[in-house]
Length: 542
Image 1 (cartoon, rainbow, N blue to C red):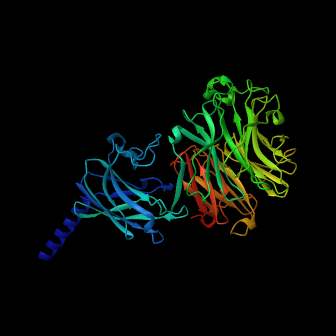
Image 2 (cartoon, rainbow, N blue to C red):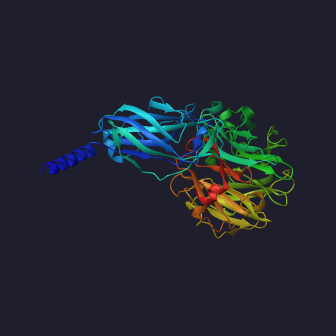
Image 3 (cartoon, one colour):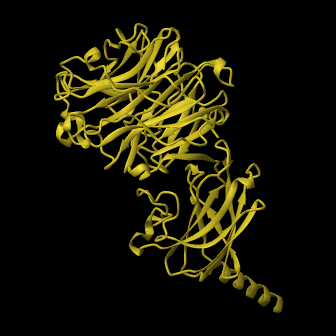
């Protein structure tokens, strides 16, 4: 009888203990870890403070492949409570803990979090002291990681929340996200840099000397498209993307024609390396006047700058260090009936026979947009346009899949997926590709496509590499994909998502070396974010 009573009492005690202990829920997101940030969100955590009075500590475990010397600090923050009327949403943060506001994108917002502990890990297991009183309802915590400045861009980070304690007892932990590997990145351009509100529309190339050149819109006043105060900015890296030189302005029109800067915008750049000479070309649309309305509807038929947008170029013959005065090629390529002619944006190519090719788009006299290409057979002295590939398409990218065969991958306003066409005669005629409108989903957004021959990469195979928001509805889940059969198929096992957060979603790819591909894109972490990813990571999908 005594034994029964003891056993019953013990069970009752254990049951009471279990029922009085709440659960710590943990979520991790596939987001880039920016090396220059003092705070990167590693884990988001929530728990109900109904029965638990005090969070004592949280224990992390870093993966065996993580170089602890790369980690400068790990921090635990308390993010306050949830509003009772939205408790049922079961979200993991009441706000964004790191601001997107200009000039405030690198560290935890001091208004939204209280730092509870900070340590530099010297072993894979790290204990962070909470010492935080819990309040009735949902309480939020998050873990931050700060990397050392010398961390390699190809380093990865994996970690788990192994345990927690509250009220002196072990606290149940439930992770709601799958284990993941996180990838490093560099914010080449953050909101507020150089006095600019926003940076948009990336283009990226690797020169013959191995220099990385990234171009983009410098949108000083806001994130709006032309017409606004917009210049073409360029960032240059000679160390594989680790560091970037001070921003240059290859195209900037100031107060040309006694018109305000905000009515002399130039934007949506595309960049090309002439691989035969290492001359670099940038093409962009310059808009003069237009009353600060959107150029997409305010550019009209005609040829002069008072009626229609001008197609302008700049070139560099010293590996992107200095740039020529603007070169206006509107008269060479625009049909006077078209409302608006502009470039890709993103990047162009040099064909094997030396022909320079840029993707283009134009709004015809019927106000419907069309994508195509323009080309030069004389090293950029003159340019030509034939016919569009597919109507109701816009931002496209071009590659040479076989000698003389060009593939145009297009944003399709019908939505759902990319349109893909090929030409063997520089755009005089086009043929729909087998993958068109089926293989590559999109939310109606710009994308990137590059062709990499077997001799130029470690796989020993001809590759097509593609990036875009891998969704049909939202600009998120930025994903790099590889095709080994000329773009006919894009297998799930040859894809890697690098940023699941919401963003503007534009991207541009280039090979950094034979082992790695670089991507400059509009991310959830920075307006222009650069990452360098090993081909082996993409090919394995992890």
